[in-house]
Amino acid sequence: MRKKVSIALLIVAILSSAWFLKGDKKVKTELYFGLSVPDGGVISNADWEVFRASQIDAQLSGYSIVSADGYWTSANGSAAQEGSRILICIHEGDQNAALDTLRARYKRLFRQESVMRIDQKVRVSF
Image (tube, rainbow, N blue to C red; front, side, top):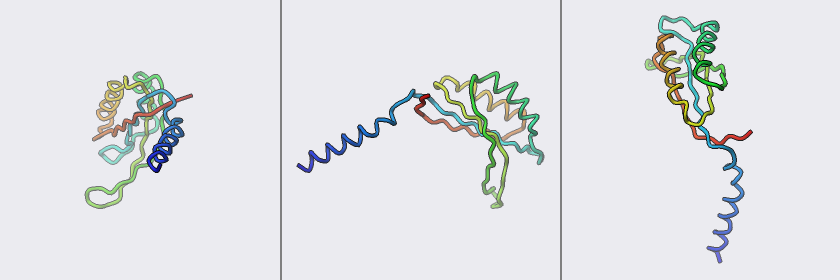
């Protein structure tokens, strides 16, 4: 009897969580663009907008940009902070080359060590 109750509870749990399975399967990619440059300067809003309009718009048909501040402890133990822009792109998994092109161009144009990329499988519905 106990086994039947456990199985019934498992079935109820699975069916009640089925809402999570709705929506189209997509990939959510986030790119983190730091705004500091090696000589101690900062990438201006005007320079960012030129990059966005000329590079991002040319590569992607839809995206969001979020302004953020990143904080971390540097290798020497001191606290560090850097302004950044986070690009969020929901896609079919077919934008990998375009996203990597953006990362490479940004690093080259603004002398950046890296542009962090995060990919997640998501479900999207409108």
